[in-house]
Length: 284
Image 1 (cartoon, rainbow, N blue to C red):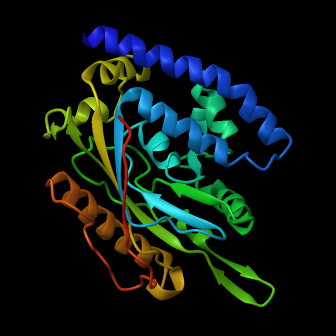
Image 2: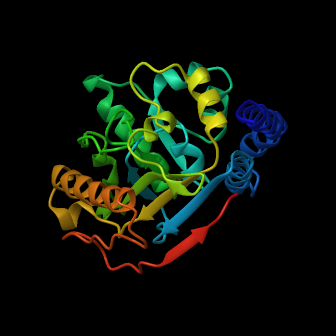
C-alpha cells in the first residue's frame, strides 16, 4: 500500500506540475493579474494530493512588502508556506540549476543568493530591498541550512538589513514577521523525534530518494504560526531583531512539537500591535 500511495502522489504531483508550468510562465512573462495567486492554488492542490494538513495560527502580514523569516526543515517548507499566501523565497544559487525544481523556483520569482560570499552580501541585500519596495512578500530562512525538524538552528542576520532602507524622506522599516513551521503528526498520531527526520531534508541527503520515502510514509500535519511582526527600529538593530526572531520561532516550534493546541502566544519586545487570530486550513 505504501508503494501504491507513493506512485499516486508522484503521478499527481508530476501531472499537475507539468500542466501548471506553462500557465505560470505566461503569467510571469506577461505580468498577468493572477501571477501571484496561481502558485497559492497550485501549492494548496499539491498539499491535498500529498495528504498534508495545514494548521495555521496567526495572520500573515498583508499590504505592502514584508520579510517573513522562518525556520527551515524540509523541501516541504516551500509548498506549505506558499499555500497560505503569495510569497517568493530567498534560496541558494545552486537551486536554480536543479532539474524541475529550479524552474519552479524561477516561476515563483525566487531571489537566488550566493552563500558564504561576503563580497556579494550588499548586492544581494539590495535585490531583496528592491522587491520589498515593490510590495512583495519575501521568505528568508535565516538558519542558512535545513535542520532535522526537532530544533531551530542559530539565525544569521546578514540579509536582514534588507528590512530597513533609505527613502527620500528618511528611513523605511519593512515589517519582519517571524514564522514557526513544525511537522507534528503522521497518520493523525504524534510524529515523534524518530519519524520527523524522514520528512526533514538536511545534510547530504539526496532529494529524489528522500521524496520517495516521504511519499510512502503517509499523511502528515504541519503547524505554521505567524507571529506578530517586528521592525529593526523597534528592536534597535538587525542583530537584535535576529536574536528576538530566533527566540520567538524556537518557542513556537517547541510549542507545536510538544503537542500543545493553539498558538504559542509568544510576543517579544519590538513586536508591533497585531491581531493574533487562529486559522485552520485542512488538506487531506
